[in-house]
Length: 469
Image (cartoon, rainbow, N blue to C red):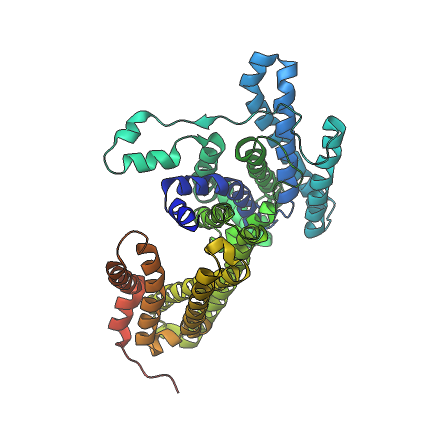
């Protein structure tokens, strides 16, 4: 069973599932990005997604009664999508009215929207179906899936792999990833995008040059609601084919953190959403093992906490670099410090992967039957636990103080080769013999360290530099 799960993770089908489960995170994350850049973060994403998901199911189901079975099957999904988006925009407009017009606290208003979305959907669902759990009695429809042309599958080498990943994906998944480029164009290539960013960065200065800050924030929140509504629609008409009580399961809250982790730009937000999608898909895969169901269910939330830790560490590093830049004045070498920051990111990621190793160790000891029994799980857990603690200890000095990297260049290189080399060796061992896997893992990890800036750092400071007194 364990071998089957591992093989399924390293497959095109797994990558396809990442795209599918990342969609309801990416869409509200783009909405959170727009509202955040406008200076009015949309805390109500969770409630808006729930209301949109429920509305889409109801209207797609009743379309078959209103327009007849045959016509309803055709227009029902799109009617559900349209009405879900309209209701989500109205919910966002309600939040904007509370905060921008009535001057209510934005956080409290967003929490009220979330409570309204959670409780309101259950109340109306009970009136329509007599069930407080789901809408399984309603003949709801799904958003169509996109079939790729067969000639893509005939492209040598990469064609079949790409075809397996992208074929038969929901139209909502395509909309989500196209939206990344549309949001980027809106933010950085249109006058409205400039106004939106100005309204968030310095509203007083924006107003002084004639930018309508209030109106811009209204529109930003409405666009945020639209994107969150699309994410909710995917949950009930693409990810599943019915509405369940509180089915978003915190994705609206995860979406609030995703733009921060992605550097507050659409492409970084997409990358962060894919990371969360990976952990969500991973949780589904390992859920088939004979382990307590709570373990795979907690994986996305552990990933969220770890991502926030990474963000906090990187914010601290950025502040440290600003302080060093101020201290050095005109002599500040921006290129040199950018190299250090990239290497620091590498050490942070290695330490966080080691934290995952600790979680795996706990899983092995608490649920050994899911990993081949105590005779297999306990020794493996001990090895992974000790290795993870060692790797955290090796990388921690470079995470705490970025200036430690040039002071101990050789140790930074060794830490990366050991840490990343171990992870790559474990991966390559699934595909080849152990000896080539070890050699390949060490070589690739060394190249990664050099590529992230190690080569240039050695040229700047030499391979050994004494610690500052």
